Length: 100
Length: 174
Image (cartoon, rainbow over the protein chains, first blue to last red):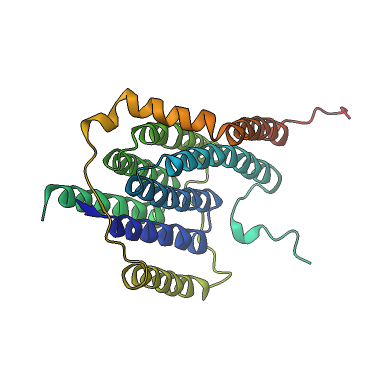
């Protein structure tokens, strides 16, 4: 028997690591992976609550989140490839062409 | 200390270690592989929570499809190692400080304000059976039919969008 609190805390720590990754890394691919990690942390909390309440709603929400994440990754990676083709560099710090 | 708790602690240790490994690897390929490990351990958590379908979707979609796409793009662009840049030197310590505050605050809030007495017991044998899957499919296709269809349109739009974005423009074509 594991208290549901432990799962929520694990989810919170994973989310924090993901947020930290978005803040400190300069490689857009790793920033993307950190976003996936944050989505995953949210999913873990959803499934934990769904297990406590003996209901499928949380699991179905996770199913939709996985589908949306797949769509997001497809478009995001296409954008990164396109940026690389134009700038020959994908360092986040150099992407300031829109700066006024 | 019961067996469930030991399994949970060992798995969460692997999850956190692989997440930190993803964060601090210098090589993007290692980061991606650490993330695959992380997704697989989270899939084991889903099995422990009695969600076999989600666990399998997690492995096929996340650990399989999405991470292969990531590795493909990392190797295609040859951006395993980026040169460190110093444009915002104060940002890294500040970010670490804020992240620690966020973690401490959320753990404090879960224990102090939202503490729940609910416990998760190990799933029964019947949970990981076809019966469970059938019930979930009934919920998905009865109550959540419209979101399901919208998701399929979203995936179609993402597919078309990815192709349009990366399409080579032919010289002279309008």
